[in-house]
Length: 218
Image (cartoon, rainbow, N blue to C red):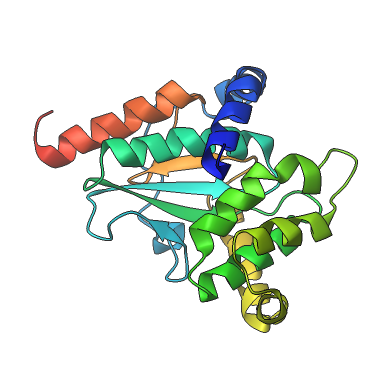
């Protein structure tokens, strides 16, 4: 199996438990109806990684943690949404490095961007997440090994990952997390709208609604 297939299979096994626990959290925290929280430009930064066409009328913003099991479970779901609406939807990723070692994983991802390997390395880190981000604590060397297997040139990447630029990104992400009241990952906004309750179908439905609005069919 390739990396994406590994992620899909693992997600299918883990998602039921993960989503069940998360629904309770979001039912309590997100009790208000779906609404646009703010037009603040801080929801998307110029440096934010983007997957999908820049001109897409619908934007999913995901605050994610590379160590987060639920983020890993949601990855194939979000990719399926992008595949379903290849011209209408784009994904913007924001870093919420809540777990130990996640800041170093973000450094790896940012270094991968400089080598035009962001998506392959992201998929490699998610596929290898059980090895480098176990509950007992991070084993970041295994994250580097996974990134190298995806083609990352390590000597250059290690320098880029520990740069002042990455530190500044993490600092800004932390501020924006507070602004948008992000308390767990993944947290999604679709065209600035939050989810009332948490789950894969809720995300699919919200994206579908925004696509129909953009197309003038709703």
